[in-house]
Image 1 (cartoon, rainbow, N blue to C red):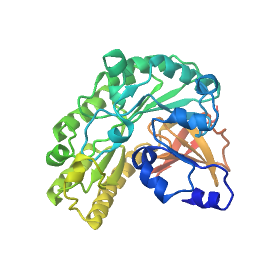
Image 2 (tube, one colour; image 1 turned 45 degrees about the vertical axis):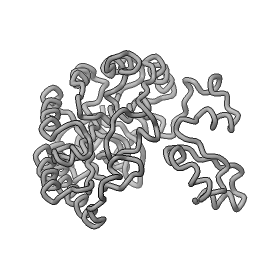
Image 3 (tube, helix red, strand yellow; image 1 turned 180 degrees about the vertical axis):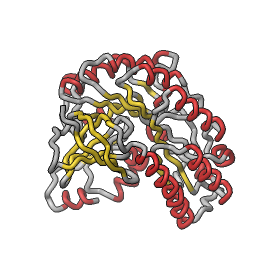
Image 4 (cartoon, helix red, strand yellow; image 1 turned 120 degrees about the vertical axis):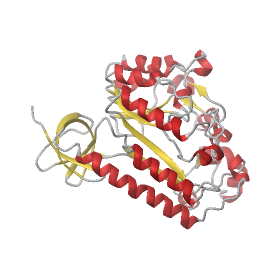
Length: 368
């Protein structure tokens, strides 16, 4: 709405909107926000480029620009999802799973490396499905091997893996390849078997527990980030307590919590949204209170360690970076006093961790 108002005042010549909402609610949006010149869904990139008079094949292949800082980039390895989670509308908006070829991803990684990117964050709606459609097998380990061979790329990070039928050889690849960060983002969503069944997650709490234990056996210092969804239709206090107990038991490194909201045309939409907004908010806060204590304990164990840190920015009196156990924008950060030390943004440095809070580490740069 902000940009629509700017356009109506003459500050913008053309206004285009793209993404999931455009894919799903194009007709409604055209009526509600007539200032927009055109709406494009997630699968309508050629139409958008045509509007911009861009020659996709000639100008853009292998030359993707980044909107992140120059030293890291998100790289989508597939689009869409074949899962049928009852709360999720992604398959409705983005369609079935479609993998990108390994060759195209390696080409893009080489381009990124040539412009100074050091960290690749691999993303997908379902990371572990990669390759099933193209190569008739789950090919993420082979992709990791190919990307690790790209000179200049130093960290490769994995996001959004589905726990059901998880290909455990991914952990072997992580243990084998130094460039693959000991980090996995694996949204579990819940820990009550009854809620998981209503969510159509195709897994149980015990299967999730076994997967996390296995990961920690093969990669002992792995950092596991997960997300949970509270307030799903029918979630009782007892079912929510199962989730609290699970978080206490598993002691995840990073946790995010979302509150359930009804999504049209999903199977969950047919259920009664009977958990009140106040209950959802309270439950989300209770999970984060548990995790805050766990995170503090984890961080206290880092005090006295020397860790490799990639610096993202300078903010106020601090240079701010991350370890391999932390993803950009969502995880813990390492702060170094800029009055005492200087580092270049986008560079790695060894940092002696001297103090820790719930979600931040503090340290001093080790000068060689």
